[in-house]
Length: 312
Image (cartoon, rainbow, N blue to C red; front, side, top):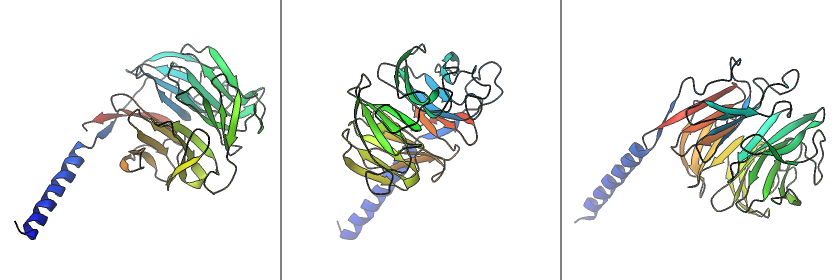
């Protein structure tokens, strides 16, 4: 066979492979009217914390159908628990928060949340709830902003490592990642304001991949930095402003970027190679269930959206 013939067959095979990959790529369809709103609510407010648990239930941490949970909204529950069909299972947390922000669900099904503003003896702290809304742990000094071992200034997000250690992105007022033991004992911290690797300008969101690497959305530096659990720098993903990060068990990364990429960026955790972008949402929070459906929480447009996976 001539070199020309071999080259032609190679090009045909490559084109066929590309076509097959395109056909296999999942499509996402916005589900109208999902989920139901609580009784008395006429629309969403700022919706930021979006988490999926091991039952494909959705946990929503929102700003009380407004821009905060004070100023007369102390009787509104900022935590909403939905089943897979979009029906409310339970709600709790009324009167406990000023400005709901980050969230995560750990391997035991407990919900962790952060309050990134303070006032009236609450805020600037992290709370761990069980599934029924019982408080199991509080980290930080409610209502007190600071940069100590038990004070935060605008804690933006929280993530739980495979060994149970707790990581907090103290990012709206400070520029650091703080590590605690599973019992809430301070262990270490790293980071300061700056643009060098290992420095931050608003670490806004954090999440672990299957290797235990910590992804930090260094939002105003327009990058995601990756670290080991002792704060050693490993890699950087440039040109992305991550407000929220969700990483699946098979290391697919979903990034909520409403500022630079203006959508949900779907990529591989191993090398940041992009798979898809959903541009029908401007999200701060994002999650994916076991069926591949994607959920986004929007602050700018004050909405909660579900994108059903079609094909792929």
